[in-house]
Length: 507
Image (cartoon, helix red, strand yellow):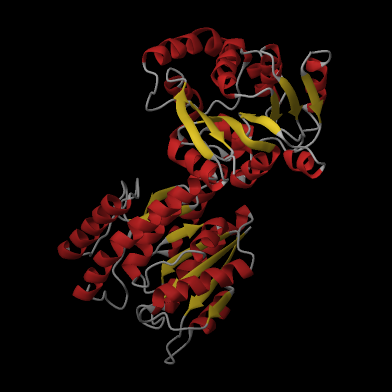
């Protein structure tokens, strides 16, 4: 494993000798764990006395440099971004940034790196203000400004669980750095590091803090200028707007967010099968009350000739056929279609094909009175493109029926295991339908009673699978309660699922 340490200095690396000696101690402490440490200087060095490269050569410490001037602002932020690119080009597995004028003790790098790896963090902050941290020699005014600045950052931008958002002593994963390089961050130093925390969290990466001892610089600390504070304050609202935009973007691909979560990362759908949650699919297929409820909600809106896309094992198709509809059930998954064919064999009104909707359209299929997706759209990354295909498969005036998981805040272990890209809210679902060319007839939440149990099971406890016993309890107890409540509150403001009906315009 390779750790690349990015060294920045406001004093042209005048304190290089003691800092590099401490970094060499950190290198030797990590070596027995199979971790190699190399460093990069960000910016120009002093021309007086023994230079940093001479010191590093004497210590046997690998040291490179990134051209530029990190000694003045706003060059510091630009230099660090250049260092990020150089570290990625050098195939760094872990990236560390610190102040090379002495206020950050490189001998604490092993503790930060080990915590970073153990927790699977996206960003680990060496914090002077978290429990166990300290900042000897820092004046009252400077300490107060730092704490006040952190409060402003967390309040305005929504950054959570961080006590020292302005420090530069940090450990980054390569994925975090790649995400940051695609952002436009403030060029002012304090705003740059503060924005980084909020942006990283918005992208779904875990941010942790490790206590450090924050020392006075060898060359003396510079005064915080009024212009620095004004620039820092001006950046807060733009950061807030960008964080909100990122969170909105992440709603359409919550699986990407989940991949960045240390808690959910290990629960991805198996790569050994086309569909990674076959056990859950089978258990839900036996949830007769739940499936009957979905069918009952959809049937009044469906025409005679129905296409079900992603039919699974045929539970909905058989119910619609029993109600008098002619159903073409299509399922492309190699490990699911045989079960679909077996379960529907000999069922009047059901035809099955192993194709995607795009393949069906390309083969001349179309003219359906209705197209139905039940627990399918959330598995498709480009949901708008999929619904445009459905639009083409429908006859003019035909209806679309959708049943999807709702409430993005519920996204948890079962969603990730099942390969869900997202959970929808009403606004997102209506937007997707409109973008695909449909006229929205109705959207409503279902399964009010299922919200709290789902949240506890799959968001709080992180249960990785839907067991047969849990499915039976849900179907026999929670579904009847939800249907009872739905009869008394026809349009609840929330629910575990969303049902939508839309229409292809006649012209």
